Amino acid sequence: MRRKSIFALIVLFVMAAGLAFAGPAVIQESAGQHVQLQLVSRDNQVNPHKDVEVVIRFDIAPGWHILSSKPGEIGLPTKVEWTLPDGYVLVSEQWSRAKVFDNEMFQQEGYEEKAFYYAVIRPAETLLPQARLKAHLSWQACREECVPEEAVLSLSLPAGGYDTLPSSLWEKTFAEAAATFQQPSAPGPDSDYNLVWIMLMAFAGGLILNLMPCILPILSIKVISLLNHIDDKKRARTDALFYFAGVVLSFIIMATVLVFLRLSGENLGWGFQLQSPGFVLCLLVVFVFILLLFLDVIKVKGQFAGKTAKVLQNSKRFNSFFTGIFSVVIASPCTAPFMGAAVAYALAGPLYVYYPIFLALGAGYALPFTLAGFYPQVLARILPKPGRWMAVLKKICAVPILFTCIWLVWILHNQLNQTQEPLVRSDIVWHEYDGAEIRRLSDAGEKIFIDFTARWCLTCLANEKLALNDAGFAKLVKDKNIKLFKADWTRRSKEITDALASYGRNSIPLYVYFDGKHSVILPQLLTPETVRNYLK
Image (cartoon, rainbow, N blue to C red):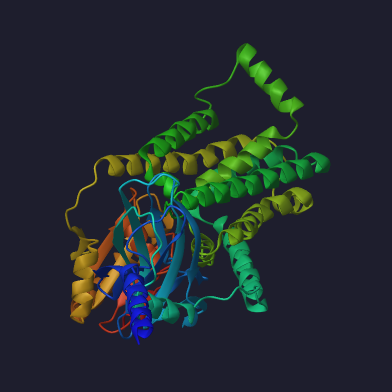
């Protein structure tokens, strides 16, 4: 009997010890607008010989969904970015399986109701008394519209030299999360088909980009260059190939820069370089120099001119190659039809899609002049033989260059003298973009029209002049009591960049109309009739 009592005491002691070493899970919570977050740690202290395990639970409001870490064709990914003590390393992370959501012609992957994120963190060999693990979360909550949101969760765990048993809360949370974890799979034929389709859209957008007004000065320069050697087929074709190479290389460099910036945590859109006054000033200096050359106000003479000509001749088609590069710089603020959706797909999609899409865009952009160089006889049938008329043409080509200079001066002036006062166009008031006010009005069922624009976007200015300053548009706005907001992206704005991304875009122009219940995106090229049809 005495032995049984001693055995029972030993069992009770072991159970008590086990409970003593069963560290309670550490919990941190955060309440977002559409998502509730809970961070659960397996242990309540850090053992230098054992990895730290955590689970983040996303509880999503009814009717809403969030996008996954790989959202698919458009949209901002859900991200968890850790700030860890020195020596701590993020070993692995895992997400719940995503569901496919249809968004007009695109598909998105995300979660509704709930989702889980699991991470393993390896501590440093030498521990500080207290380790602070901080997670910055960002995601996109969507219903009819999409709203970017973010939150910060953190844990402060003391150093400990012993192991602990997981609490019942951790076991329950981890078991629920593990049942939803993503299983690795190879890309399917649908994703390949979507990428090919987007590449075709990018190619078409590149072709149409040649017709945008911001490209006219470069086309003028190349037409003159080609006409001077229209009888030399070999030289014309070589010029065309070097121009093609310069264009394609520029798009590859641009894709590389955007990949680097994305890996660095930046969220930039198409035409971001013209948001810099310094870049605009450099462009202005270059265009003024070209304008003076075209008007014969200045001429490159003397020893420098001879050496320059020799370099250009020895390097064969360096001039055409540089013109290809320069034409891409000039084209960057413009967005053609089909191009906006293709660029948005690339900038919001996985990194491997950047290069095929930007290569397709560059090939489409370079193709018209390349074909003209390979088939100069077509130009010979249309245009007269080289002669004095080309000197006149040179002066005519200076006109769009002059307008480009004026345009750049206007951009620079507006960048340096931006105001936040309401704008009046055609006796209707446009308010500066205010995300909080727009959400308040949309929740109240008000009608809203948002114009995402910039002073460096010629397509935006043309749409504004043609359709948004129209008397019929002003009457429609007053009759329907539509609230107007202008999101001016002339200078970089994180709020406007995030707002563009919430609609699956990284470029402008973008026009969004909310009729009180649903949002609709208008075409990039507007006419008064198009606007009336959408707003009715």
